[in-house]
Image 1 (cartoon, helix red, strand yellow):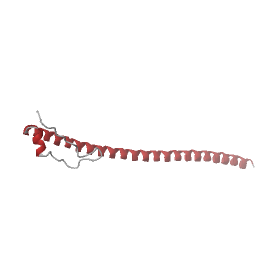
Image 2 (cartoon, one colour; image 1 turned 180 degrees about the vertical axis):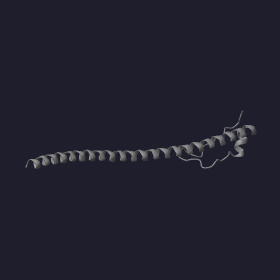
Image 3 (cartoon, rainbow, N blue to C red; image 1 turned 120 degrees about the horizontal axis):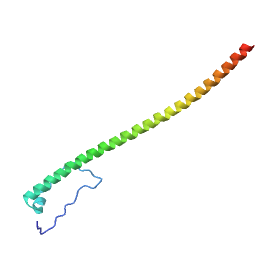
Image 4 (cartoon, helix red, strand yellow; image 1 turned 90 degrees about the vertical axis):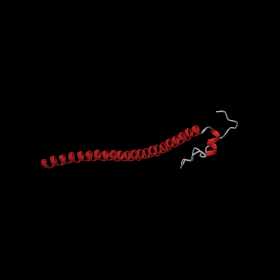
Length: 115
């Protein structure tokens, strides 16, 4: 494939821009690049790579959504866990108070029986 002139094909989108629609190569560029057969192969692979990029973008969005859902679930779990720990402390405190009251009641019962 000998060519007398070089053709620069620059990407119209930067990394931050996402392609929104597939745009085929202009016919003049195809003709300058090589034969019709070669141009068809190039077009096929450009189209194929574009579809792959679209799928990757969808997967990236799906992955980001799952990450966000996981983060929210983790925060909820930690909140519930913290609430559970507080409830356990309250239960332990109430058990201790009940034990004290029970001992006081027994002491008063014995004292009352002796009098």
